[in-house]
Amino acid sequence: MITSYFIKKKVQILAAAERQRSHRSLPFEQVKSILILYNAADHEALQEGIERLKAAHKQVQTCLFVASETLAEEVKKSVIVVEQKALSTWGFPSEEVVNRLSTVKADLLIDLTRPGCYPMQYMALRHPSTFKVGLKYPGQEWYDMGLLVAERNDIAYLFEQILFYLHTIHV
Image (tube, rainbow, N blue to C red; front, side, top):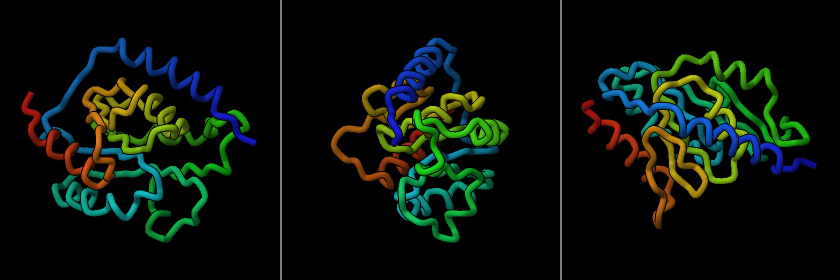
């Protein structure tokens, strides 16, 4: 049985520390590599946006969280796959997986995981990227740039909104 209490507490501690760091943003033109974290169930909905990033000559790598479904061949091409069944009893991904993700070079990390997906939040918080973007659900206010999720919870639409705002950054 996997419990989320311990990983949730660790995510809260890491998020509090993350809020204290100085926030940074990059103009989209300067972003060369992007790491996208998302739930495998959202794979099809996000493909169009991911392909547009690749067409814009960005090096895009993905990290998926797989709750229970089997992996399609195209999903297996992700740089990291975190499976629910491989989490520790306390809900943590293995240190090997966290370290492997930490070595992925990314100027920009985009976290599109759903609320309550603590293993992916944990990995996003541990990643060394200097510019982190994500969806702001309650308790996830640690991003450098976050999109507040209100009524429309369509992941493809939210991803499009994030990409739109990233293109408008001219710092």
